[in-house]
Length: 147
Image (tube, rainbow, N blue to C red; front, side, top):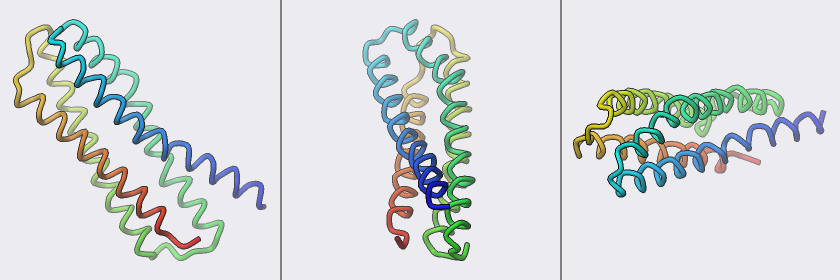
């Protein structure tokens, strides 16, 4: 039983670490490509982000509540704990802003080689920053839970 719990805890922690690191890496890559002013490079990075990275990060994000519920259920904690309910609300907001960001990236990609307006760039960076803050808040709540 203990080996199962430890394995599940590792499998739950891995996406929790990979998600914020992935968001930070994409923020940096897209920011650097935008600063260079090369629309072709930016469009390729954007397309790769939309087709590969966002679905992978979405799958990682969906595994967190499932593995987290199994961890909580295995220990026997009630599901009404403040940290658990707070993280569920934050996760709902994370999904909402993730879908908004995906729509914004699709609009950006639809522009093709034409330069994106600054307003679109600012919204994309703002959504990504909100997603990163939500991920960090969820990780903070999970760290504040009882042993």
